[in-house]
Image (cartoon, rainbow, N blue to C red; front, top):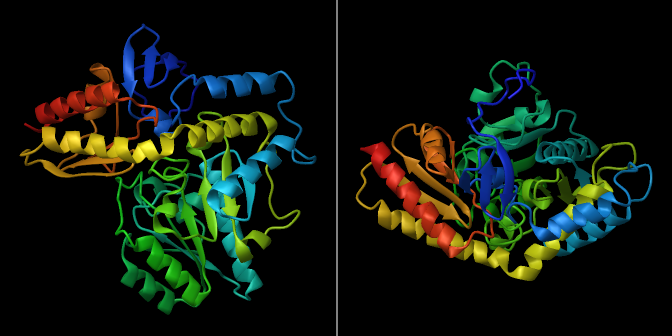
Length: 390
């Protein structure tokens, strides 16, 4: 690899040259089963025909005009997302961090409209919302903030899955304007809250006239077995963000809003040069059509349970396993020790995995993973964990 790239990533010693479905091939021709999916991005796998066709077709006609003008595919995508989400409108960006920046700006302006000069957004400890200065300030992980002070004011962090802590924070600060949370904490270690956690946040926001913001960057677009994870709870947030799987590798993010929150941003308040351009929207429309027409979203729940059950069976009795948990195809295997080196070990055995929060193996396989690949994944990983933990 060129030495002229900033050393911001601790990359694995492999370069991929092509992919097909759940498989990747490196520059030497070796094949790997991809259980990371570009960090929950390639839910339809690699080189999916529908996405390929949409991108190629669009590249022949129009790539970009900017948001100074109408974008027909953007309007189509907005209509489709609103129909799937139950929200009212959408702002298109290029990434999850940008979508979250839009959500934070909505919360702050909402606070100012209520006469609050220094609005505060509650976020959660161990959360991850992005690496821009705004989203880094919102993130509840001190490790990734080191070296970037001064961070932005206006955020208060409380423990995840702790309603009394939220109630105490709201009672202590009259400047609170919103609660921002992930339905499942991905980077924080695949932390799955109580079944009614989101419902109770919704109740708190309704009671105190706060905005409920859900970061569905990783959980959204079908990964948990619903199009959006909040749909498991039969609620609607005021603001919801998504990105990652929306374009299956073509960069696109979206910030959806409802009710009062949908009316906060007006012309000149926010913008993006590339956000929602024709190429990105063509890819996203192909993704949504494929996901909603194939049954893959519902299957994500079944496949996740199958992976969890197989790993629990294979690792039963291993005293170093703290927990094996999943929400659809977000799967975490927590060990009682740091296990980052398992990423390289698995790579050598033709399997791509990820470790987050130092001690949790995170699996984010594509939604198109089949039964044979699930067997390969679970058998290979279980054997590696057994060897590693001896």
